[in-house]
Length: 324
Image 1 (cartoon, one colour):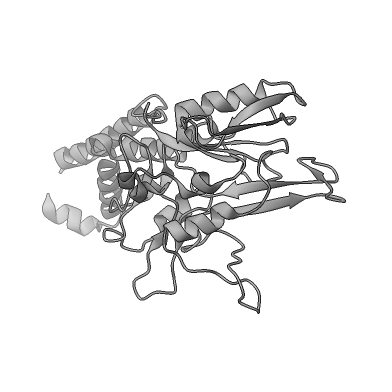
Image 2 (cartoon, rainbow, N blue to C red; image 1 turned 180 degrees about the horizontal axis):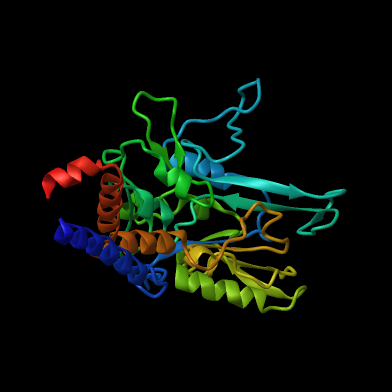
């Protein structure tokens, strides 16, 4: 009996020691994932956006999505937010008189809302069946409805509130922007960028888009510069226009481990509905915790130790004596 007690105590102590060692901050911690050099994305420049919503209509057409009506007339497509059938939308900020474009006081500005294609995507990390996947080369976060079990963990995990569940069908599925990756085989690219008349939405490699974003915010407000349209590497499709008083920040460069959709604005990003996020991704943090707890069977050992203590607590004295 004494030897058994020593064994059980040793097991519990060993599990606790292993847990202490494994739970150390440096143990099993992983860094944010890094962008692929060929990662594709978008650069959205709010100062160039005129709110025409051509991108919203083009996205609907490219993805064969039905209209959504927000008014009683049902005369035209008027979605108020992204949904399972609206993957891209333009929202508006207005303050005071709302007369001056890209002014925080008595002004207005636009913001594009769609999937950010996070470098270290929490929706991919949270999905238990790999219905959400990240392309190793392009970095595009894709969705496979055939693999999806409808758990909606991706919906809860996304800090931007992008994956949306379609409740109105017999077999619910997730709807989100996939950067029109289905059009690549025909030499096409993201429809929102393809139709944008001002180049407010620009498609290309994220490394090139980031360089372009930094070029713009380094320019002196009021001067003129060339703005490419459609694709950043597209021939000479560009126009000359004035430079706005940009915020000295490229949203998405570092937020949440970085995103492949980058944004520029002359108005504070939080006022435009973009969340303030840390540089470390949730996926890196949660996977570190998971790997820490399950690495080396630490959690099972602790569970076994806890069960052993509980069992021992309720063993009757006469039972102990009968076994000796």
